[in-house]
Image 1 (cartoon, rainbow, N blue to C red):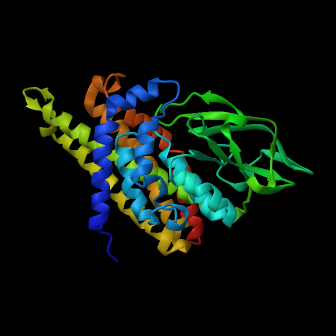
Image 2 (tube, helix red, strand yellow):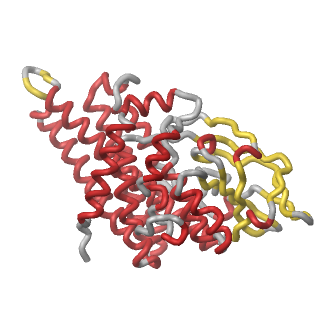
Image 3 (cartoon, rainbow, N blue to C red):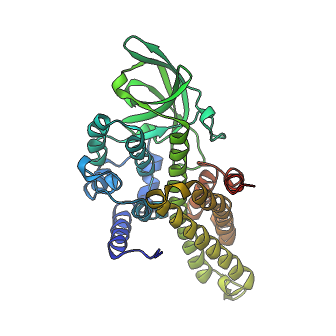
Length: 367
């Protein structure tokens, strides 16, 4: 099994790096997250024109029709620059429509999503600390003309930047999904540690959903979408962790202490080496998990739990060490490294922390 990237995948990586460097460098990221709505419409359309928004969308629906290993290439580089656009959320929403949508829903929704005309996100659990179908508690009431929803969906990622939400709920006690336009609900921005990953509480007030906008969802679908969410999150973690390591390594070469660059001291070298080994370890686990999505789906649950379970704690430690090795300057808002620590804190529980995933590995292994 060859896990080396192809020439086309390497060219894709270079393309993403170039676009992020030219149009979404860190000063631009800071500008976006300081605004009320960190969404850059022109950059989003460029991403659509390059095919990134339809990477996993089949060609018959206006997409590129690539695999999840290709997706990780893009996610690593957008994660490296902490790009605040809702690419990850949109990707998971696309996967949801592909998994759960009817042929007519796919034909109606996917072309607009791939073209960048409809920005979407997935609102799954109502309890962010519980990754289980029972964590979906929002309810809809069946009526003669559809389903009516009242209540709140908390902490929906990128909700304020999106045109549509795919919302998990219960109808007559059974799981389902509903396509909802954001202009038909009210949104309350949620305070979060990582400003590049904004979220909002979504409030429904007797909103009517037609049957055409309802998608089926069962327990297997729920766990599959959570696994894809973990793949997406871990891919972004790889890029962000590598950026934090590179930033810290460069600082260690430049910072002079007692007449020498601090990178010459063993205590610094060892911590940088540990960061490198951890990143390479969960990167390899991620690549295997991404491969299983398309080529060995039965192995996906265990594979992604290995990757996310390792990355959850390892990336958090990378963030801590990166800030620590910068010394006092690392804690200042003006310096970029603290933003990677915040990303590590956001990513740690997203789609399962290390306790959840390592316990799952043990369970899947028969322990």
